Amino acid sequence: MTARDGLLPAAALFHSLADPVRLAIVQRLATGEARVVDLTRELELAQSTVSKHLACLRDCRLVDYRAEGRQSFYFIAVPELLDVLRSAEQLLAVTDQAVALCPAYAVRPRQVEQS
Image (cartoon, rainbow, N blue to C red; front, side, top):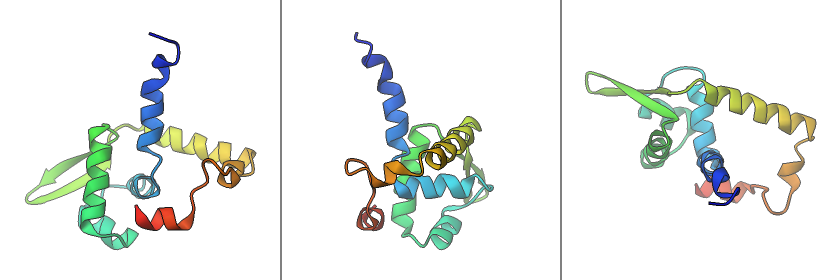
């Protein structure tokens, strides 16, 4: 096992958050619980898109849901996720969002729409 192998879980965590749709879902859930129908309406996304990304976030144990009757209410499963997002916002601010200009990592509007 190399030292780099020890970084694989962290890389997977950041990869799970590397999609603008997943970040939008997490950002919305940071304000409180939501159903899939709420997320589709508020984020203006297809139900299948929201469900797919929620499944990914659930598989990573970043979000979870509670059932109430036939409805499922999704929420942030680990509050530390919000700390990571706040830290990312601070990092973007102090670097003047330089990563947004980086040719290797910049997300272009077309990539956001296709997610």
